[in-house]
Length: 428
Ligand SMILES: Nc1ncnc2c1ncn2[C@@H]1O[C@H](COP(=O)(O)OP(=O)(O)OP(=O)(O)O)[C@@H](O)[C@H]1O
Image 1 (tube, protein in one colour):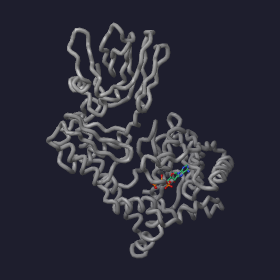
Image 2 (cartoon, helix red, strand yellow):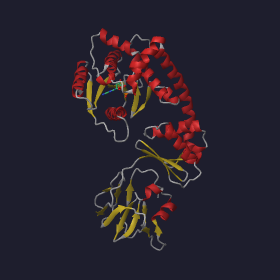
Image 3 (cartoon, helix red, strand yellow):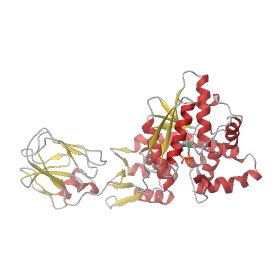
Image 4 (tube, protein in one colour):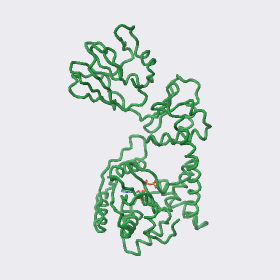
């Protein structure tokens, strides 16, 4: 635990790697971090410092902020990359969360091999996070606040200033006459975090002057407990895995508390946003349902959790298929399918029509009785929501392939391959 006397060397002690990419907004916190990292790097020749500023384009002055960051970094002899991003709220995320998501993607894309991203969160941020999470009814992971170090992209994310109060960082900068940008949105009390920062924490500090440090201490205790539970939960994963999904019957043998922890882990490790308590309750009910063939679907912000037979799939919501889509294909070029359905490739050349499967399709393998699409798919174990997303290749009106299955080898494209990343399609 660092004392509030700021020491640049403390950054080196916990750093997961000696190459640092400073996430530099130009605000007080990350300005202090950039300067401290440069000082620390001078004491440790193995260290290398770069910076990245993400321009969200959300404020009239955002270009000027980017220019400020580049000049400040240049004065310190640090290479600063400017990443312009567009913030997309269409997946149902609020503006702040969508901006954070875009920023994190930009940080990941900027990282070089061996680099750790350094964020400037400090002790006050940790106290705010903890109170926010409490107010939102968080479980043990949320009560652990922000971890100092975690895996991120190809490397690590590291928060070296968590032990320092904001006021100490400000004093440190002022003593050296170093300026920073004030983001006007920090004063906007309609944002929950700002409300806690300006209205809640000052009252708490009046009564308990050490409350930030104490809250951080509680976060560490919760973090240790969360860690132990995570180890137990992780040991379950091999038992729960089922192809590219998860076994519903194995999951439903866990008690509610462990099941919701495990689900949170599976969801976040799949790169999806973790839903709140109400959705979690629907997920648990879906897994425990005794009607395995009913249409089991739970959705939240761009994610679909679906159960088919005994398998739970956690899926990104796929875009709708273009209606009546059908094209001619000669096989000379791979055929990119619309709506993220992958592509078809063949070594053969000919004249085929490609479209998506339809409920009324009849699948006729030579010498065998014809089968309806639904019957064929049931037998192959294709979930109902995927059936009409299977690409169909036709020659002279005859279906010669359906998804990964060649139906009529004589007329099908030679060595036909459907290359896709869609969960729930059985291997052939
Ligand atoms: N525009 C930006 N460009 C580069 N880094 C940034 C930018 N904005 C924020 N950061 C980095 O992220 C850290 C946290 O910033 P901030 O608290 O605003 O965002 P957050 O990621 O949404 O975190 P929180 O979960 O605390 O709300 C900053 O200290 C800084 O290191």
